[in-house]
Length: 160
Image (tube, rainbow, N blue to C red; front, top):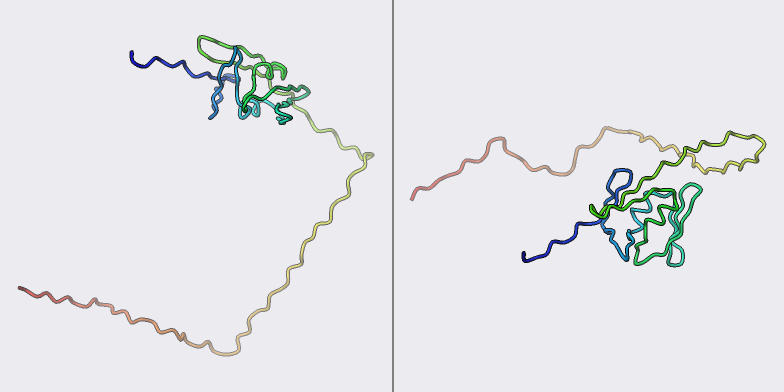
């Protein structure tokens, strides 16, 4: 064989669905390194960049990690957010199982809580346009129109 076979690309699967990205994940010193977008942004509520690191929040949990050229060791971050992470070395696949967040309902209205006053909204009053007054008979068009013949001009053929 002239060219050696390259290793299959590393794949991250979240709840049975493979996640695709232009920046592929890779393995560095036994850790799966993945880009922040889309791998962390789709699994968390907020992602903040802070001093060369990243702060990820989901529900009442958060995780901090160091950034390396836009990549982060993804498994420890996901585990601290409550996900189950398993790596299948034979298939080169990181399988992530994450439960959905519980549904949070809005608090009921409490009239005793002070409310913000409504803001004034400026809406201009439309001014009526004047109607045109027709005082005389309309004048004909002054632009000359080209005369177009209904029948085309015959072509004359000469024989040689």
